[in-house]
Length: 128
Figure 1: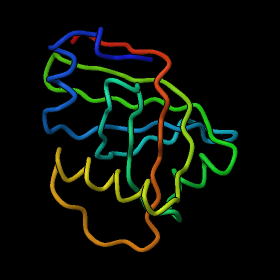
Figure 2 (figure 1 turned 45 degrees about the vertical axis):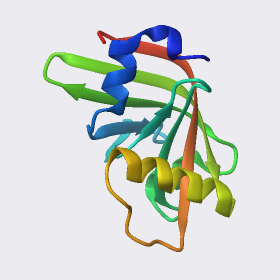
Figure 3 (figure 1 turned 90 degrees about the vertical axis):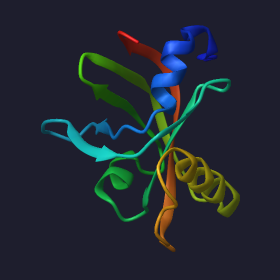
């Protein structure tokens, strides 16, 4: 999904420094929702979250991937990205995601077990 067509307000909102929440399906229970830092590539429609490979969110996504929702809010402005998440463990994918994260937030602390939650966006909700 090319998200450039969502407009400049949308693009600006996803460049600003905001924390997000990532919701994953919790088997037999409520959604698992956690705060995360995220980046969005507008041209490819790929959102990325860096995390430890041992985190619960990574385990819920697992080897087969999972449907997720990534949301950020700032006052009355909000945006939710829905899509399919997969885990990326390749060193070049992790390094790329760390560079993107550092550009939006700050350089992440070292983590040898880091993985990337890569979300292919299929639906956009919100008011930006």
